[in-house]
Length: 409
Image (tube, rainbow, N blue to C red; front, side, top):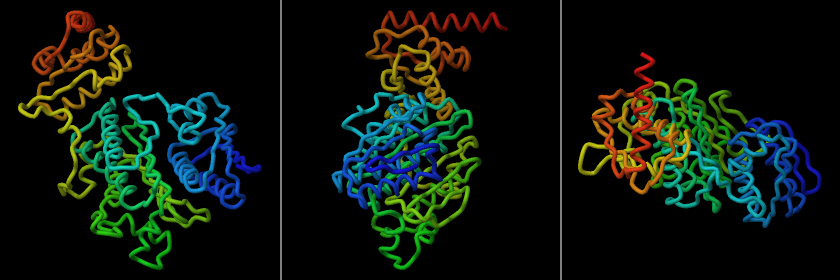
């Protein structure tokens, strides 16, 4: 990584071990050298990860607002990485005047998004939980509730404590084969050490980070009980989970403990990877059995208000009804819901859908019929709002799967 006038070149791997040098270079060309037109040159970058990228993007947003800095971006030469910069919304967030907002909206991950208000935060938390619910890996209701609590707490910390006009940036990634999910939250506000020193003067940045993950530690009890970072740290220690915070001149992580840094992070970067392979382990880790106050996205979105039944509206739950991949994700979500509510039938509502592809129908209901069996399918799945043409495609998909299953026996 080097500087040339207002150009910052980022070569090699951009990871948690190198991103502070990028922040330092950006600071030098803007605050020290006085450049207002800055080029972030990623042409020589060979890999980039959400945590480091979001920290850089949060810093750019602050410099753009406070110092009228104008950022341009050169994407990586590597073809796959170049596409990632657009799909993950990094290119738009770095240089919005040149790059359009990403239209890539897969149901199982969430590209980088910015939030500045409680309403935007609530929308993002719901979007993230919905993405996790679409995971093909098995999920339990308590683990999903623990995940929802964790994401809500960390994003809320930005609004309550960061004192950042630019709000925060968040991104979700999934690793279903490992049964892991990772979310990253970054801001360019006052940072954890400065926040902690408002009521505990004199402590070092490293001491502040150490203290921040203890239960009940907060700068202001009127704003919260101080369980957010503590609880997040606890659940990240389950199985193969990981946790890292970078703020000020310090960092803390499950891989390396607490350490002092020579280059500061203005604001806070939190990277959390959760392992949900052990049923209910995340929930237990939150409070050793304490029933913490959680919002419950599943209950609010899917439970019928008057009957013990799930409502699954296909046009809301499937990003498309024209592809096999969309059918696979919709089936994963429905299967997860049914496992969380074993005694509840599901109203699968096709209202507003006039046509579905054969591949979607096969992946969604054809394979579901085989996976749960004919008797359970007939008793648990209630099709609603199905027009004649859609009904024909669904019937054919189910019958074909049933015949194939019979022939394979």
